[in-house]
Amino acid sequence: MNRRAFVLTALSLPLLARTAAAASPPRVVATFSVLGDMVKQVAGDRVALTVLVGPDGDTEAYEATAADARAVADADLLVMNGLNPEFEPWLPGRWS
Image 1 (cartoon, rainbow, N blue to C red):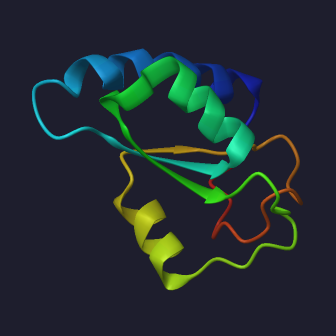
Image 2: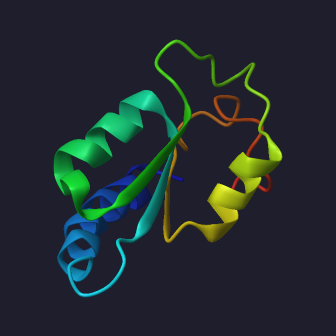
C-alpha cells in the first residue's frame, strides 16, 4: 500500500462514519494501536474498531490468532501500515 492508498483509506473513514447511523456500524480493523487511535479520532464511536496489536506490542513479532484472522476477513475496512513490507509480515498476501 503506497501513500496514495493510505490517503484514500483515510478519506473513506468519514464516509463510513456517515453510513454507520443507518445500520450497524462498519467493522474496521487497525493492525496496530497508532492506526487504531487515528481511526478513533476520525470516526469515533460510529465504527466498530478492532486493534490487533496493542500499544506495547511489536507488529514484527506478533502472531495472529484465529480470532484475528476472522476479524480481518469480516472487516469492512482494514487500516494497515503498508509502507514497510516487513512491518506486518503476518498479514496474508500483504494486499499490496
